[in-house]
Length: 239
Image (cartoon, rainbow, N blue to C red; front, side, top):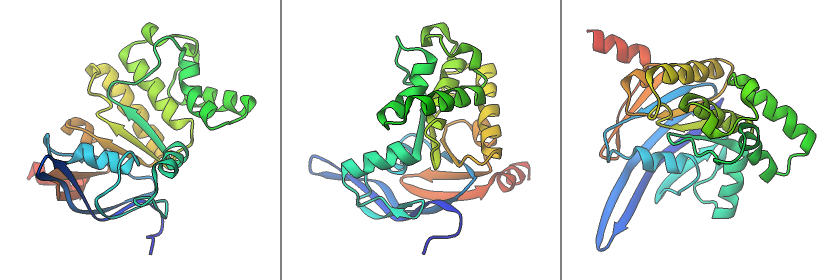
């Protein structure tokens, strides 16, 4: 049974990779729910399973065992073609390295997912302009990535994720390549979008970034070792 308002439901998810004759268990019986409108931070040291978990959440990979339901749909058993449709329709991605097309304007970078989705030109234009306005880049729409600062490039990447109107936005170290001022601008935008209802999952090494979330899930050796509201985490640190 799907909990009311849940966007992500993982139940006993494991992921095992084969390296020659050695089996490496990257995730071990991972279970959690992300509800609509949450801002979840996922933390853990290198090798803890964060990247593997993000790949599964983004339908880039499938669990070895266990269940993953996205907006009530079981996606862990879908083939690659159907997972690709889920990625296009329901998931917005933002990466540390921006992943913008260098010789294409900010406008065209944001528009690209809608072109692939076959959205009509008039609707594409209105949605792209709306997404750029959301991240404060209306005046930079025709600039190339090379003409934008790192923070502006990341904001273009956020607009590109939002333009598909996804069920969840997944961010992988979104401030990792930014200076403190640009990072603050990006985090302020993410907080505002979350207050407007965007369900958001951030994978981060940064405690400062994680403290901006409503909840922090920590991984170690493929296991969830804690899953707490940020207020509880902060109080525990203070005590």
